[in-house]
Length: 309
Image (cartoon, rainbow, N blue to C red; front, side, top):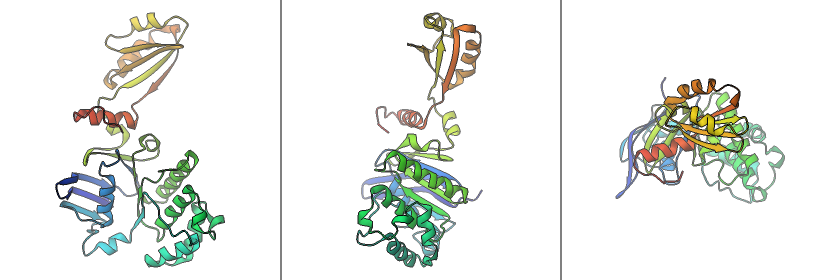
């Protein structure tokens, strides 16, 4: 599958500072990719490179086969929609006026602007001054302007930053709708837990390096993050059950049973052992490693244990 955009062995330096180094990453058409990592990991630098705002020090950047900072950049950028981390609109203007302004900048007709404002849920406030908008409403307006011209590739930089939980869900509901319509979406975020169930692929950045990229399943197979099992047991059975399980597991007695941590490679072995415990086991829950656990494992593998996500 031909990528809609890609970074190929890309390095960006600012004097002695290396912002990103030797990054190879491709965005597939019709997929949502989360670009995750701590603040300062290099996520925004990669987005600026894709927008053609800066040039790589080495390697190449392509949007639909074109260099976004080169001669074909204008054509490539017309296929992009961008939501910056900090949305800044003129407070004295209304949403209708701002959308018309951005449509002119993009060379598009404003005819579809009302539909875009309705799509993001602020049609009722379209003629109010933006200064009266909440943070969530301004973010929705930012998404609406990013959708002008029906771009094939959307870049969202920390789209849920500063939003309440309900507004965060609404942002990802909008992203789900964009994917369903065939758009490619890149979501840059350091909020790892909220993206893991809403994206197709994940690219993990840390201190300017791409640690890993792929589906969550692919990432889980590539690290040693552990599986957690929670056994609900008959009263007072925890000690006996722990003694009958295979050796080498980390078992912790809980009020209602036993918590077990084990390597992924031993999951089937342990499940087989549990199946032979009979009525002592009343229920079992299995939690595979989440994105935060995968991130920590990848960082620790680089010898940087203790770095927060």
